[in-house]
Length: 88
Image 1 (cartoon, rainbow, N blue to C red):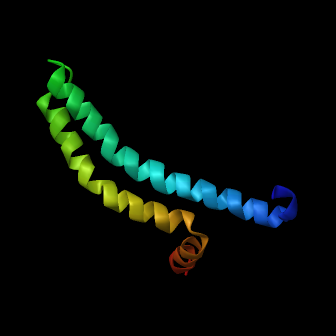
Image 2 (image 1 turned 120 degrees about the horizontal axis):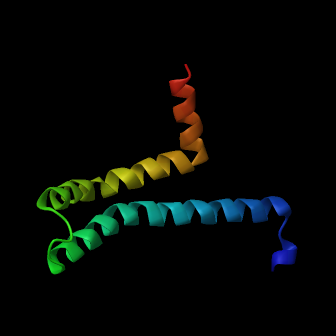
């Protein structure tokens, strides 16, 4: 299968895979890192303060915003249009 693909196609597939991994990992980390930290803060006494826990709760709703920003920055058509608007 790989021998039938052109170098440009292989490059496009790798770029798409990298974009999909970014779309998965960055929003996922915006949700899971605070959630896991809060979970351990509840289980382990004196692991983190209330203020830190409260701050982590404020990060969790930004999951969807993070996902949208990632889509805008890794999709070349959107990225080029945004740069054209900014550089006007």
